[in-house]
Image (tube, rainbow over all chains, first blue to last red; front, side, top):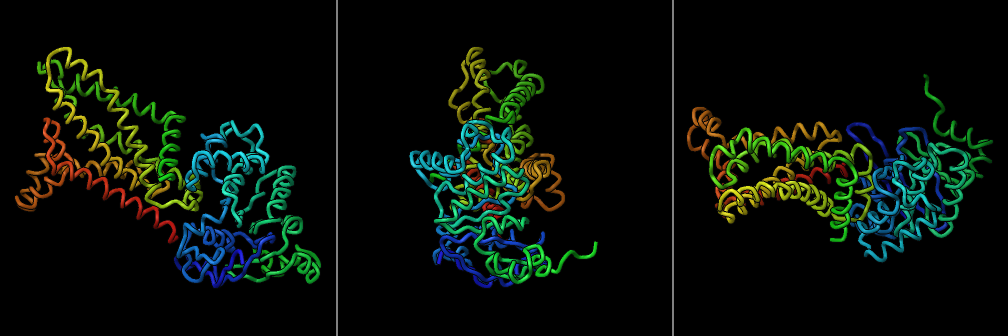
Length: 240
Length: 244
């Protein structure tokens, strides 16, 4: 099993952000995390990526416990944080080299890895320009390339298409679909059409708890469409 | 080790591609010059040494070293890039050390660029160059201590200005505890023994001896321990983020 998450729990102060989340992922699966803002999607992803330590429960990547053996687990994960933070003054080339070398690659293998990741994400000529001068779409690709540079088996992408225009969104989706064929992917999104377009499975989270784990088609069959499924499962809009 | 080198190189690149390092070095050199010649009376003293130059270093460093250290961690937290950094399989110490060494290198470069002063005293007379060398070494070590303190405080906040103000405050207290004025006050308040103890732990106490050209092993150990302690503090602060 690529990823096994069991009883994951995390609170901040008295607020329980993630409450007993359990699921697993195999190679070839693209799992969409759905849920309202503040439902616990990002916190769950951060715990799997080894950025936050869970209060309870485990996340195991190829049976390596992230909390126990963090660095060995992180070697197998590529992570795109929400909003894809980057170092604006660097070019994609120097930035990706930095990521690859901080991951422990030698200068030579880092260079090859960056060329491959830049090719996979179609960075093209943008690779030599300062990141702060690039369009949002290209910056997102740089973030994706950084998550891909070490060719990980598990990709965790926090809102990979958020804030992109329809063309950019389409190309990022195509990329995710391509990457997901031989890896495992978890992505969080607000877009239900995205789940239908790229995900093989949808996990719905509400108030820190998992409320559904099913194929998008099954959710549609049960509730009519994904919109209705989302509203029913997450309790609809609370009073304004 | 590879991650340390990568982090070091990135930080140096970041200092060089933003105006920060240039502005820092330029303003530092102007300040050093002003204090040495105007306030310190370099020419009036009529001695071929750099005492007037070194005497102001602790007080200048209190402001300048926090200024280069303030962005090290707070900027990562503000931009969210810290999430990127902490999800890389690199040991925390390599990140902490890489950042610290980069900032320390910028401080070292600023010190090296004061070489015209050294040429001047050698032109005007025949100074004890070994003593000057020791003075520079002590000054560099002291800069490292201030930067390590600044880096640790930078890891506690996501606002550069807050990191800067806190670091100036801590550096000032750690330095001024060695001033005769403060020592006299402390002797009255808590007794001679305690006051002596606090004074001998101050940065000023250890730098004063070294700037006269004698570096004692004690002082060397003192500065290195201070750096190590502050770096350990950085590590704790960075790792504490994982706890949420």
